[in-house]
Length: 311
Image (cartoon, rainbow, N blue to C red; front, side, top):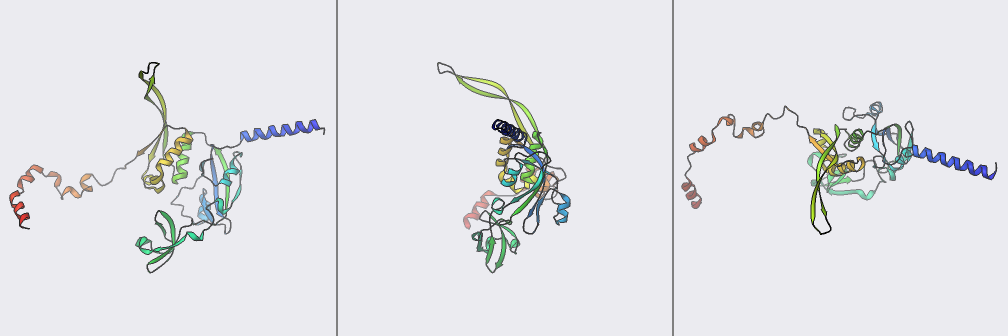
């Protein structure tokens, strides 16, 4: 093969590779993925989207939904080495990625094991293995003797190399599905969502050559994400403490102008304010005429003042 033929072949191969990369997954894409994560040492399942795999691993299948997850590439939803495997890939790709501990949940740090006073731990959590929170740090209780407790603040999977087995099922282009999938990654459940385009009026102030200001009103379109907040979602700790960051992430990645959370209150609760407030003084309080009740009270203000002075 001549030098020119070799150069032409190399150029053609480069063009083919570029076209392939352009057609592959890239940062910002949303994909539906089936996966199972295991510890490399003992093949223990720590997360999966497959119900049968969960049952075989004796994971409580009644507590979680087991189905493929929607992942936003570039959003930190997967380990960096896994995301590298996804970038440039296509639907139908499958494989296993080895994730070293430092790229997973970090190396185990002996200095993260501390001895604290036992009274910092609630009484019902004073047993080995209990998950505890001390000074805004999450940890698990190793031992407790007398008034001292030994708490490990390392992540439970710190020091563990992992294996991430996956299959890329489809690319998700629908923004409502994307939003629901992102919330599912954060909250372990996918709430109902909808995106509406709303027309609003906005005022802008302009200044002419003479320095005079003019207020103009124009109509603009806003894309608004409505999220139906279930009771479980409202009690979710990650949502309670990070709702602002989650909403901002949704707006940035889905090009939204606003996120609105709709609270749903189901019926069949306490039966009205009377039930909540203990009947406001007992049974039948709702039938009492307040003015008549006050008139029946025999109170002499001067007598009360005299009694206070005597004390």
